[in-house]
Image: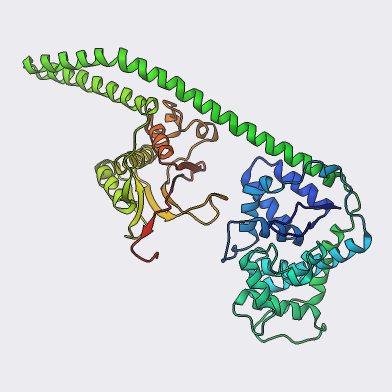
Length: 494
């Protein structure tokens, strides 16, 4: 049987076990290219592998004092960060694995107990098997797992466990617990050890013991698998996948650099070679228009002048990539900035019958940013959504602090600006090129030119990122995420 990497910051060599079935399911999850599907696979795995759930809880730095909402949220973090956390030492894949039947038997007992208590607690609490009561039940015997992993009992709680889990464990031993979740787990432990004919508390569902034992037996069977073929290969597979991701990231960075360098050269050339003829065209058109009395000819000259300015503006946009702006960051109220952009686009939105509005409360969120450039980026996203919808529909803007753990181990706080529309959505083959300069997604209902590319460049200059989530016929959401260590609100979040 394979052991997981060290549990974390423990001074003891504490390594929790990993069953062969779990190793196989981990491999299948990491080979799933769909991040959503991977998270679902891992959630199902964690619900049946208490030591793995404990290991993930100890490794996760997304939650400090407050616990995750349940197994699904813990699995989502694992799906995003797990490959970098499964850091077996080089050569560990060829080291002998655990084969002691007595130790495996004790692990099996702990796993069966953990899953039984978790199922019972969830049913008593009226929750699904992915809520906080199930998670608490799954981890309620963490001390015993750590003790078998090499941590002396007196140090088990204080070694390697997050604050929220330590608090849960302490409450389970109290009478009564201070909060509901450990309370349900305490009742579930009593139910598991109670005689079959014991009458439970009125109004609380008491799951039949036979049902719980039947489900627990399926967990025990996972620990009877003696083969270790996948477990031995898992460290090497993880290292290969980590390396592959690194190469993909490096390739994307290099590709992005080359694209920007090419655009930079094009922008410099266009600026020197095209701007002068454009200036002459515009000047001549304006001169002729002043002397022209025929209305139709004046209209044509005005079109020539407007198109010359449009071409000049396109070259100016290209120069944004060739020579990124020197930002002048100052305190900016994101709420006021959003309202300003909405006011500028109100006429366009009303002309096509589209509702463009901010749906978050009138609460000032202050970040340090260049207000002018940030307004350009937000306006580009809103314009893009308006063009995507065409007629009717809604474009909604949300402003909110980023959820804990959204950016992995990165420190500091982050703010998000979400622009959501109920347009036609973006096909996957278009989404890959969405921020490429001059990529045409018109067939998908998106605009032409450099609007989204400018937005991407400006957000990047602020040290942030921009993401897109979209489904066919179900709309699109763009998310601008900005580092906001100095962000604050003068009002209490509602």
